[in-house]
Image 1: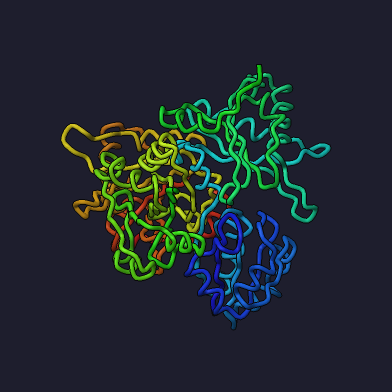
Image 2 (image 1 turned 135 degrees about the horizontal axis):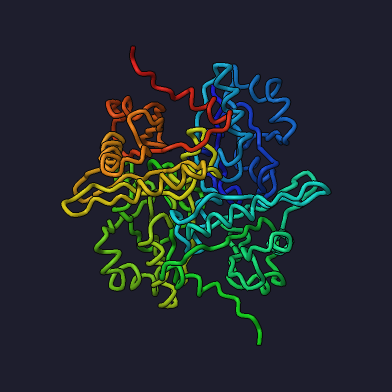
Length: 258
Length: 258
């Protein structure tokens, strides 16, 4: 039958589209991808809306057991694969779609908002963002400097950088803006190229797309101490600013106390 | 009261979110932005869904007459400002939000899918896209080479380039993939830096997010003659491909006939 990739958007059960809801209600089996992002409601809220049971799909199920579960079901049933945000934000979903294709299973795609476009709510122009990067929790022997290099290149071309922050869903561990800034300052300490200093102006964001988003614009030294509350957070390093961008950022400015 | 920016998503009336629908139904006045994108249904379909009358907002209304219309209404009424795709894809919307802020009018933001994230349906990874560019209809004395430069820079850093194609909504004129490719080849003729040649592999897309999307992957020389059907079209110049990206692109490959 069909493997329906359905985006849930950025917040809770009310962010699904009418088309997405209609399709999910007609599905025989519903999987919810639960490791690349975070839903701002209980799974039971979705189950009540759909009037159907939902199967939680962790990374192991999607990456190692999809043949016996999701893909096997989709051979003769209508299957929904729900993804928080948009449907192909992660390679793991594209890989699932590819495996379905190879098995001759038809796929359908219902898009939704992603943090990649919703960051435009900061006032920064989407077309002025360069490559996106991710900041991960450092581990002994694994302290990648990739984000630093991406920011450096984007800055060189006057482009903004969106930094997505690490998620360890199984441990309910979500990187904060503060942790991300410390991570970048640690890399700066080693590289000393003045890409991220305490004086660099950055944007810290939390819960974009929800009813209580936080956006704060200010120096790294200031945002290090700001509380952004519940996850998910993300960080933006602006490039060259257009005057309209500058005006909007004024709304979010956090002043350093005298 | 509130100026509610509500994204409609990429296709028709069924792509609004449940939250968006709920908000619009409770609005006193509804404007539909009608010049930066294209809705795939009649306005009456939206009116039937909302059970409300919709005011069409062309560029002149939003950019020159918003104070007397949208912003004036929002002072004491709940106003919806509907945008096809996501809400801040164009500077003109950010500017409207800024003007509302200056007048002390509260804004609310309901995101939706945008072409900027939905292009991931091609199998290309979103985080590997560089700066986005636009290709406009050339006019006497106005033949910008910006897209060529953006593609060149992105390629240098192995990044993909999304090219958004010009829209003249008032003339119902929408640039096709074929026109965009001709435009780039014309610039190549002048620049001769081998950034876009007849042998360059590109992706032509049409109606992404609709029920009949087209994605074709092949050489410029081949795609020049392919029919992509109804608007909206967009063009992607891939950078360096990951093996999973390569595998997905095989699905969309258009072979040159022997």
